[in-house]
Amino acid sequence: MENNYYPFVNTPLPYEYDALEPFIDEKTMHLHHDRHLQTYIDNLNAVLKKHTKLQKLSLERLIKISVRLPKKIQTAVRNNAGGVYNHRFFFEGLTNPAKGEPFGKLAKAIRKYFTDYENFKSEFKKAALSVFGSGYAWLVFGNNQLKIVTTPNQNNPIEQGLCPVLCIDVWEHAYYLKHYNLRADYIDDWFCIIDWDKAEQNLINCIKNKK
Ligand SMILES: [Fe+2]
Image (tube, rainbow, N blue to C red; front, side, top):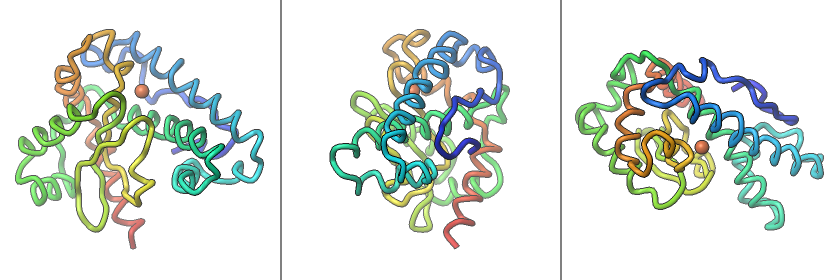
């Protein structure tokens, strides 16, 4: 991830705003990247401006240590560092046209832990639908296995020592303009634009960093 240290800037999307049409609409991408993510960037910079020691920490490190910070700044760092990391990770994990299915190491791991891709899809969708209110569903690597987890708000699995491979943002702002309140339809559309090259690379990095 580029721009991993303070001061954070809103790096551009790796594709055009309308690139994910018809699965995710152009207006949603403008609002999601230019307003929602921008707000997390601004808020994170504002917190770190007052806490110079934290300015030397990477985004991942800020998330990892946030739970140990004094209560007063813990929420601000956790929510805003998470908000920056999670959105970048989500956006960078999408492409159109996409390959349709995982391949390589990830395809093998999915078969090992979820029997086949169709079953994985159904398990992942169930998890993404189960998030009450705002949050994310993730495919993560941890303790030498692949698993699906969910996080509320802008919390992130790296807080628990898990390494993200894939994520879907299920905050309503991610889909409400196009899919209204139909999160299930948005999840189905999201499956069509997963960047499996990126997910494969994420898994390879997760395995490498464990050693
Ligand atoms: Fe979001």
